Image 1: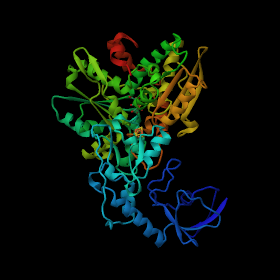
Image 2: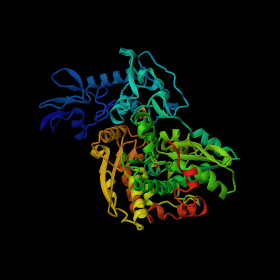
Image 3: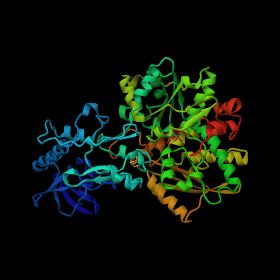
Length: 573
Ligand code: HC1
Ligand code: SF4
C-alpha cells in the first residue's frame, strides 16, 4: 500500500493507483475531459491537474501514480487558476453554440465550464470548420472537436478499425478521417462507439427525427413504428426514470401520443428471425456445409459492415436471414398492409434502434409484387426517440403502459434477449434444439453463452453444447476488436466453431452507439441484466411458441425457409 495526503485527508491506496483514482476512491472527485479508463490516459486536456506540495508544480492526476508521502491539493488557488485557463483555451477553439448542439445538457465541456463559472473567454476565438457529408449516418462537426483523442483511441483500441487519426501539428493539431480520406470511403462500421465516447457534440448520428414528424403530419401515410429490444433498457436514463419505471409500454404510449398510427415491438420479429435462422443453421449444419467455417449471425449491421470491409471471404458464411428490423419492415409492408387494406406505398415504417448502423442497414431494398422500395423508411436512435418525446412536451410521469398493436403483438423472452450479447445465440439454440429433438429444452439450458460481465473474457463466450448427441461448438463475441482477435484465431486454425454470434458493440445492442450517453461509464452489462430478467419472467421463452408468429406462417409465410419466406425474410449481404 501507498500512503499519501489528498486535500488534508490521509489515505492509503494500492501501488500503481493513479492520483485521480486514489482521490475518487476516497470521495474526492477530480474533473476530467479526455480521460477514459484504460483507453485514453494521455492527459491531453490538462483539466485534471493537481498541485504536488513541496515541488511547487502542477501535475496531471490521470496519468501520474500516487507515491508514498505525496501531499496533493486538488483545488488550491494555483490549481483552480490553471484548470480554468486550460478550459478557457479549449473553449477558444470550440464552437460554443450550445443551444443548437445535440449534446447540450449532456456535454462534459459545458459542465466543466459551468462548474468553473466561466462567463467569458479571454482568448481570441480560433474555430476550425472542415466539410462533412451530412447524408452519412455519422456526423462529425470539427468546430466542436476538443482534440481529446477519445474517438481515435476507441476506434483503434476497442474496435480495431482506426478510422480516425491526428492531422497537423502544434496548435493546428486536429482529428480527421485517417489518411485525409472521406468517411464514406473509410472502413467505418457505424458502430457509433466514437459517438458514445465523445465528451462533447463533435460526433453524433444524423438526425432523422424531422422525417418522422413529416410522415406523422402526412395524412396519406399510415405511420408504423417498431421499437428494438435494447431501447427498453435505457430510454429512461436521460429523463430521470428508474429502470423499472421505463417500460416498453410507456414508449408505445409516447409514440401514440406523438401521432403514430401503429406501434410494434421488434421482439416479435426477433422471434421471426430465430425461426428462419435456427432452421437455416440446422439445414447448413446437417448438410455438412459448415465443415470449414461456422455460420455467423447477421442481425448486427455494424458486424456485417465490418465483415464486408475486413473479412470479405467470410461474408458467404453469414446467415441469410434478415435482421429483425428488416424482417419487420418487410412484414409491415406486405402482410400487415394487406391486413389493414393499404398498399405498401401508404405505409411509412420507422424503427427505434439503439444503433447508428441500422440507419445504413435500412438501405436494403424490398421487392414485393409491384413494389420496390425499402422495408424500413426511417431509423431513429434511442437518443432521437427521447428528443422526440421532449419536443412533443410529453411529461414522462404521465405515461401509461400500453400494449403494442395486433396482429404482430406477441413476443417471447427469447426475442427480448436479442439486445444483449449472447442473446441471439441462446434464442437460436432454444429453437434449434426443438427442431432437432422435437421437444423443448429447459429454457435456461444454453445460458453458458451469456456474458458474465462487461467485456469479461475479452468479450468472448465459448460453449460446446450437446443436442441429442450432436456436438455444437459455439462462440459469442462482442466488440469489433475482440471479433478481430477471434476471427484471426479461427483463420489460423487455433479455434473451430459451428455457430458464431457477433455484435459490433461491447455488450451487444444494450451498449449500442445510439444509446443514451453517460460520459465514460459503460452500462451495457447492467442494461443486459434487465433483458435477462424480462426473459426469466416471460410467459413464453421459445420463439417457435409465439402465437402471432405461428399465425404469420399459417396465414402468409407458409413455413420457415419457404419460397415466400426467402423472398421477404432473407437477403444477400
Ligand atoms: Fe439490436 Fe436486433 S438485437 S440488432 O442490437 O437483431 O439495433 O435492440 O433491434 O434488427 O431484435 C439493434 C437491439 C435490434 C435487430 C433485434
Ligand atoms: Fe470507428 Fe465505430 Fe466510430 Fe466508425 S462508428 S469511426 S467504426 S468507432
